[in-house]
Image (cartoon, rainbow, N blue to C red; front, side, top):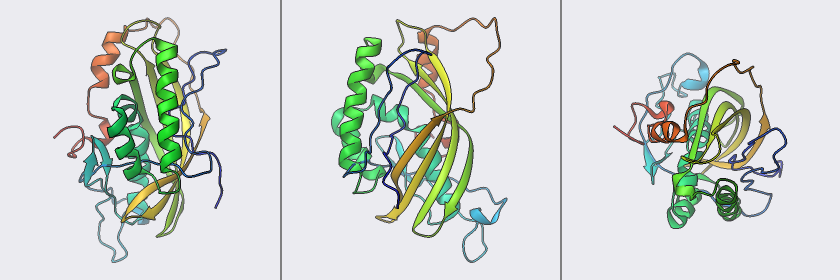
Length: 240
């Protein structure tokens, strides 16, 4: 298995020439992450979303840890849902307090990477404060998955690619930034759940932004950031 740096994917690209690159967590050693639970029906459009008995699967999540989804089925559909849940929860992880963050990351990641992931997120929170002059608990951080692909799958390991748009900033101060990036999430079946063991991230593909758009204020984005992620709609995570 590759020991590439596991990026908790909280990396931020704020300007074309800006040097602040965010949260790079798992860097090959021992690194941590935690999780949560919720129940969500799975799509039945392909073989990945079915149990071995041919019936429609429930992919998860089945619960949550501090509002972050956990609890997925040992199928390709479950791995796919776990990767999407990971990406969509990065903003929640940024805003949690230190103790809740550590507990949640341990639930989300493998034992191999949990500790390093916790340390990396702490460093990322410090960088956010330096960049925006705001406490991370008030961070505008919306990582919205747009498309997902299961690149590899077995009962013990899966590699899932998630294309997402990141909106990041603070309620006041500099303009809120947006970027597109692709996360490649490696998951292992550990502790009766899919756990993140490695994440790499590349920028793009990036569409052309419509010219002449007037940016909204940070307070507008702050209100939306409180909404439940659309991928968790209908589950018990982040709402009802």
